[in-house]
Image (cartoon, rainbow, N blue to C red):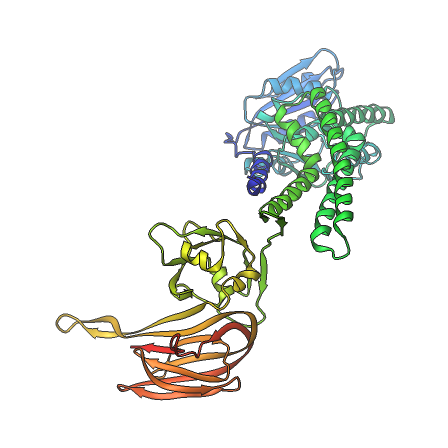
Length: 592
């Protein structure tokens, strides 16, 4: 169960962070234009909007204008005109217009954009039409406003540091309507930043679009003061709703202390097994201190999180996502400790007089020489299991275990008086070695015993391996009539007998050539002594070799077939010793 925790966490995160499905939109856009005393520019904005083909609905909301705005718009064709009797604020006008929208995409434009052009409007809506964003907000080339620089950006950086927009208060933006239908729009100038913060909390895709130069009517100091107050109120309200005030205060401090406690626990466990001068007593005290800190602050985190959850008005799914943003470091730290504990518990060995707990780790092997096997390999640990049914003479193990033993599938291994064939694992059991009961008894292994990769050779120490190498010579042969087809004309099997050692020693590269074609190659250790070469299981030569033997050591013919054996220096060490004892087997046997 503990081994699946990382996968479960990734699955939950995927649901929470990548749950935005591609919504099928009708690719038609409605534009809502709030207007308050904009008789100088409203007609230009409407005429420019009409040039955009994807905009099929234009809604103008006169927010209690006292000038000629309403009359001018009423003379425009294909425009839905709504009116507030009194000025209610930009957000209220946007709400009124949104109720009349019939398309899937909504564009909000200010009515005082006296020089906006068709290209700029198309730039705002295009990312949504292309399915690249759910919301687009604009930035443009002008000196940033005082409310933005002195109020909005500092507050956003403090409470919502993940947001990094050049102009967070830009009033021109577009959105999918389904999102707008599920949030509460502010009634005043806080509406723009409120939409951005709500979108971020709900995991919507927000894109800031640069629309170049834009002419916007400058606000008076009094208007800026009102705007700043409304923006501050909106940001602080959202910070409270999404738990950001608590996060940077009590809850944030509790999270930091919790991580510290978990880190102390991890350090204590690590020190117990891997730091030489950190004895059991010091490690135990360290772990105990970390546990006390962790339990205390975990209680505080849970208590404060429940309080925030009960006070919030946003959907449960979104508050859970917000908590994950805040608590993610704690979750990761807990998973790390659980993984460590799971590894420790998996290495417990209990006998009549003691309990042994030795961590069993994977082995990272990096080859420093060119070889056919992978140069970087992560091996083990391996768990001993029983052989599969009706396989009393098969030993199944992973390719990484074979690499450690310098063997290959199809080889034979001699354990005691019995011979077993090495075969590949089934059902992706890469960390399992299936060994028949007779072999387990001979090797003194128990079921579910865990073997480190570095200990694997010592488990099979002094066992013998017959390295079986098959080489087929393919050529055109006569078939029926005059037809020819590819077939095997010569089949050669080379058996090389070696013994598994724990320690490595300088090795030789053994090459076997038949009719000047290399048919086998193996790396092993040569000791001083006599080595028997056999062909078709009959001894043909007793070779006297030593650790300095090199070059062509056998060159002869057998029934008109040329056979050569060449030894080469490898410059590397091996744990396989070529066997020279004639009572056991031939050192080298070539079968034609």
